[in-house]
Image 1: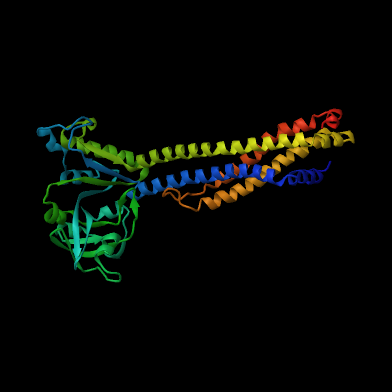
Image 2 (image 1 turned 90 degrees about the vertical axis):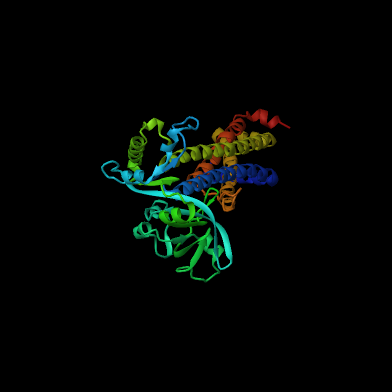
Length: 407
């Protein structure tokens, strides 16, 4: 029997009971669309985490003062004085003989203050640092000019403001450049506006004011000797671990301790990104595995409908075999029916999955992974062949005399 004849007969068999066939394809549709959507959710979640970490800089190290020695409990006494980050640490980390893999070191002082301008006010995070901080944290200037080394050395009361601070303090259309805003009780001149960075986790990266750390020390914190953290940029991501070792050695020397007992925490953004990617891959795999269960259920539905079809058409099978139909022709007919049901369900499932992935799910924007479409569709066809083979083989193996006697 020609393949076209087999397809025609299979379509006739499927259309004989449209509702039952539609429900069978619905099971496959749900399975395929679930695989695509859940993998898209996992991929979108992974992308969101990666973007958040990338916004912090994947080529950076953050050195935090922990106020303690090593990983044990807080230590009292004279040892605690060594847990401060100082300008001496910054200068030595920038020494190319001590830390050749370090590109820049940005001391950071941060505090939260009320920012006001002409009666408008808002709470903002003020970050005191140096010009290298902008590049290390991937901030760009949208308008105005950036901080300069001269601003730091002259302790200039100038500031860069983020988009949230801009909208809180200035009316729409108002040029903030050159205007004086009040931070706490001190006036700072706005010399630039930062381009929007969005949020990183729960942190609004646009609700910031960046100023020279010297001015922040003088006007806001009153601490002129220590820093809350250091932001270190490596020369490349491939040598970031070397830069981390060099920083640890500098700090160990300055604190008179060993690397294992440093009273500081060093956060390696590249390590965080690698860990996040591994976790996200596992999460995506688990979501895909859960969705695959529904596809398996759809395959069982295909097998069930084909077994019912074989039972209902036993006499038809007997007549066809009695007039000369070969076993292969009967097998092909019923196997094609199963495959066609899975094919239709697979195509509809792919379309439903792509459409469904355009909607945000629990705050996550799904991102369709191209491989998930091919995977889900291929598995749907494989399911049709696998679960359709037994009913098809059962029909093809019926003896004509037994089939003709069936009522």
